[in-house]
Length: 221
Image 1 (tube, rainbow, N blue to C red):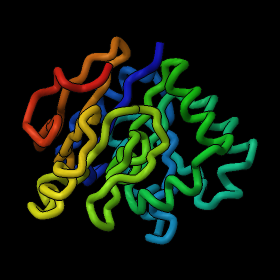
Image 2: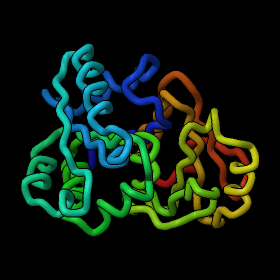
Image 3: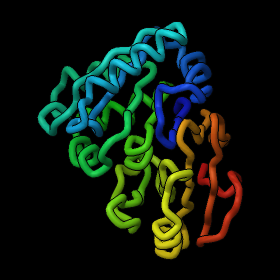
């Protein structure tokens, strides 16, 4: 049975992210592995340092795994570290870079295997977007390929700051079989091991099917 999956709308490792304590508890981990891949060109170490301080407050260690480039994602030692982890967190940044680094790589295979074996996988902003397929293209609101861990689901992160024009364009172009979720910052859409969905955190989660607001019951299990 897979573990818990957390799709976070952004603002990770800050007050209001109440769901992280529950993720730590459900994982049983004594260490959180933080991948700053999406922030490779945005001072990735800052994300790691923020995560270390945040999870220290929650009573668990955190450390960074420097999968920043395509060769990093092909390295067996990084894939081995992920398979041995119980809780891996993908930070925000560029979803296009994150996808290009991880697609069809040993590190991606290890992430999927870790989750399928019962570990906790969290992705914030770009990290949440790439876990789905299709993926919202932040450059214009259209759709592109994601990594496909969650098919027929697409994420709009920082939905509380998403422009109305971009949101309208995305919803108009959404394929009929795809559910779109808008997740506010410091908010998580959580998939429990039994396939049920719930929202937690400082903001709200909006769910749309065929451009029409609906509820969490519309999400694929």
